[in-house]
Length: 108
Image (cartoon, rainbow, N blue to C red; front, side, top):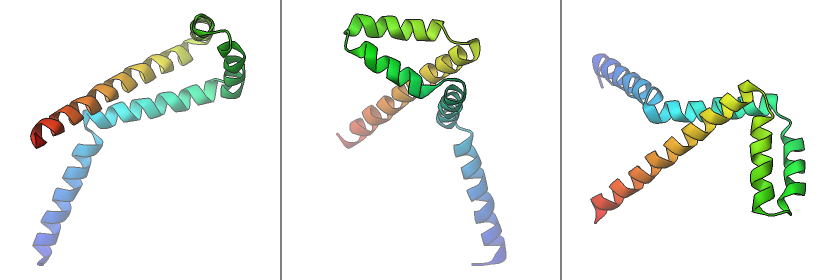
């Protein structure tokens, strides 16, 4: 392979990688990761899980009350991170479902 062919292939690979890293799917994953890191930094997850374990025995009504109280009782930064995580998760689920439905139509 000549030097010019190697340069062209390298530039094509860089452009392909840049397009993948700046795709909508990638930004949704980045949002989910950033929100998870933010939540982990601002929330004592071990305490939340311990409190959740004690509430979970009370049934679904207690779980819903606990989740609502936990979300409303936290700081704005954590609430925004939770909203970002919820949006990114829902959006990723839709994307993955769309991917599976399109691939199943292709093979049918």
